[in-house]
Length: 466
Picture (cartoon, rainbow, N blue to C red):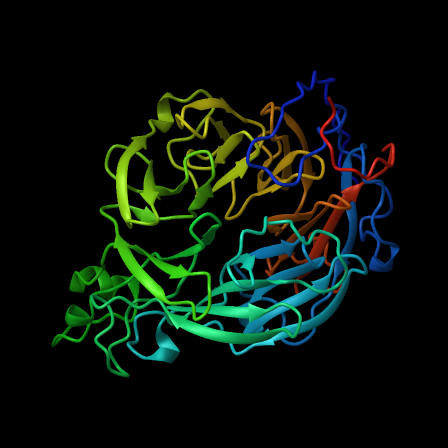
């Protein structure tokens, strides 16, 4: 079924000089609108490559199939700009799937991950699922920028950090697709040091501080190993965890991004759920959104060198026009601005004061978001506010203006390749939406690719319009 076209009024794009953004962005096209071409099954031929890098609306381009077991359990996707690869967490196949974003083909799998296992059993095989999230860093922890290898062939002088189940952080060679080393993020409060007292759960959200060369990774749901192993305590499911009083506060682990990748320490937080933190260059700090805390969600301000917190900012979601009382997670730096998903709607913030500048009401929020410096857009997945259809939401990252929602049934975790402005979302198999999602081969899940449909000027320098 063809979705109805949505016309977006012309927007006055104000030129913004990006600070602390190493790949200057082109301003978003002011006339993005929903446009559907082709039949409902879409285009199964992913060999066509990118469409116009410049303007025009976004639309479905193709779906990439994944070998092995059907993709039923997946957390995040990551486009690595330095080597034009898309990395997908695939717990269903105990690894990280790798795709070439230029040819839209599967190229291999980083194996040896935890897979789709439970939490609370006390052993390495029942201590959280994975892989989960990604961030890249220079191979030797140098001063290279995030995109300093951008478009320099198929190699990369960066490594990929991958959070995994069993409180593990892997360092992956992106050229050989092999794990270089694995680091434990276990904390003494949740790991008793024996084979049957492992209760720290999975490592999850992750980001990189390029100034101090530190990777910070979260363990959001640890359990007390002393309470879980006590007589009568049941820590194999949520009901047992609550009854046993075994839940602990989430924590971050700080790891040196330089070999031999030493654990520098941990930082434990109070009430609330540890969510998707981000390094903010304007503050020289990590910011960490916390959900479920008394008084509303708030943002922790973290000094990575001292591993201490500073006064945080609390948000009253109900008081924000157009926002919901609860939200999802994640923060994302987009040039001069910070984007948040804490109150059920995408919100643009001032990264220095953390004040809310505007709330986007046309789309909801999802598990992961992305800033694409190629066309200056901020990307989320969430429900269309009018139709309720699961969609890819596209905003002007600089002005905060909503531009477009594209139906994306079952899709999540958008990430983009800045060179072509193509957007990739993971679509795990789900029987309820298998008939209506964009996957060509049903019953397996896939990666869905969106691209500009044309109308661009072919300018490929990545500079923002002045």
